[in-house]
Length: 123
Image 1: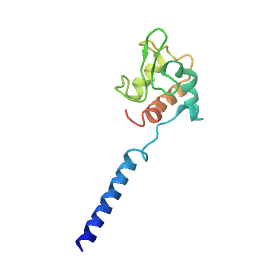
Image 2 (image 1 turned 90 degrees about the vertical axis):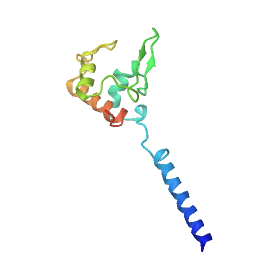
Image 3 (image 1 turned 30 degrees about the vertical axis):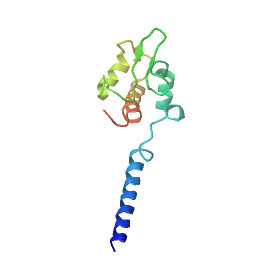
Image 4 (image 1 turned 45 degrees about the vertical axis):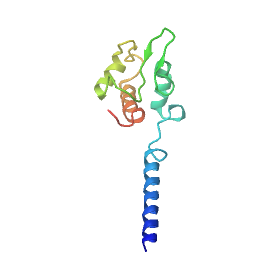
């Protein structure tokens, strides 16, 4: 009886461990891949933002040595929708303003894209 109980406990422990591993690693949320997306927002990003923020929004260093921040993770300078909207629209800190290149709707779409797709809802 004790051998059966020990085997049962071991089996439960192994199953629990596998479930934990799958939920933490392979089974978790997959990063949004901009280059594979056909969404209008991803297209806007590729056309207007990728040149500085990188093709997958991970940030990059420009040829003049300027460090452009990634938009996916880290300590975000602009967190709220209003802050992100203002920065896209007005520019600043080396970024050009997009208020004359993008419509208000497109800027709002990019704000949502950054918050939901790139940051996975982290604000």
